[in-house]
Length: 350
Image (tube, rainbow, N blue to C red):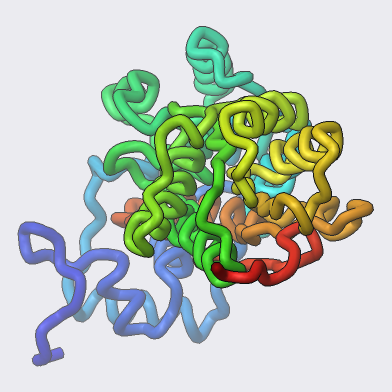
C-alpha cells in the first residue's frame, strides 16, 4: 500500500480507524475482529470481512496499543448511566437510546439518579465503579469546573457525556445554541420584541446554551433582552410557573415567553392563564425538547425538537468506540422547531 495511510497516531503508526477506512467498515467492527477476547455477546463480522480486516492489518503493520483504555482483557460488559431524574421524560428517552444501542452491542446498562446533587453524584458514581462497569454515560454534567469528571479522568474511567456538555470532555448534545436561535427567529418573525426567558438552571449547559442562543439572536436583531427578563427555574412545571409569574410581575408588556424545557413551558402556560391572559393571543410561549405531551395539550405547545433517543444511542456508540481504543470527538445533533398554537399569530408591527 503505497499511498499515505489515513488516521495514523502521533507516532505515525496505523490505528483501528486506519484499518476501518481501508476496509470500508466501522471502527467497532475492526476492533471486534482484532480483539476476540472482548467478551460474550459481542457480534462477530462475516468470514470475508474478518479475513479482509486481518489482511489489511498485516499489510500496514498494525499493532495494538497495550495501554489504550478499553483494551482490558477482563470486561464486565456493563455500562453505568448517571442522570439527574429518570422520571423526566427527556432523560428517560435519552436512556432508552443508550440502552438500545448498548443491547445491540452486547452490553447491559443500569441507571442511577443523582438529583443534580454533588454528594449524591459522587456516591452514585462510586457505586457504579464498584460494580466494575466498563464505562459510564453521564447525563448530569456541570457546565464548568466539574470535579467529578476530573476525578474520572484521573482514575482512567472511560465516559461520554450526553445531553449536557462540560469543558472539552467528549459529549453528545443537541446544538442548543442553535435551538435557542430557532425559537428567537420564530418569535421575531411574529413581531415579538418584548420577551422573557425561563432559563433553567445556571449549572446546566442546556440552560446556558439555549438562553445564550435566544438572547444573541435578539441582540443581533436590535432588541437586547434585559437581565431582569431572564429568570432561572427548575426543569419542572412548578419552576416554570413561578418563573413566569416573576416575569409577568416585572413587565406587563412582555408578549412572549421562551422556556428552555417543555415542562417549565407548561408551568408558563398556567401562569399566563392565571394572570387572565390568553396563550398564543396575549402571550406566546415556546418550549424545548418537543416531548410527546407538547402537541397534545389543550393549547398545543410550540417547541424546539431535540433528538433525544438519538443522543442516547450516539453517546453509547461513542463509549463503545472509546472502550475499543478509538479516539472520539464530541457530537452535536441538529434541532428543529415544531410550530403550534401556543406561539400564536403574527402581531401587527407598529
